[in-house]
Image (cartoon, rainbow, N blue to C red; front, side, top):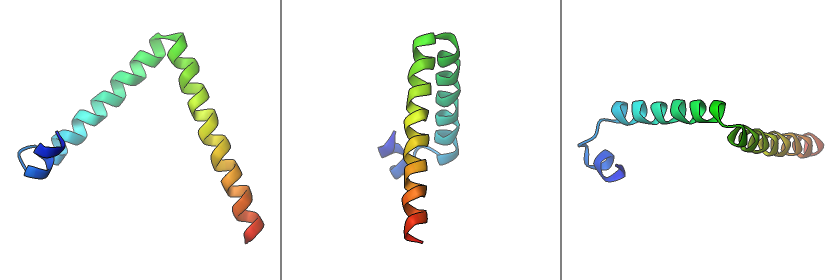
Length: 62
């Protein structure tokens, strides 16, 4: 896919559409599977915690 994008044989808008569909499919899978819901919740919890820590450090240095 990357080679096709770089070579110009695959339109970037079609690739963006493909990526959007993949995200939608993932969201449907997460809604249907409790285990995936837990994984997704944990993933976002870590992301939010990291951002919060980053902002706290940034505020100290300002």
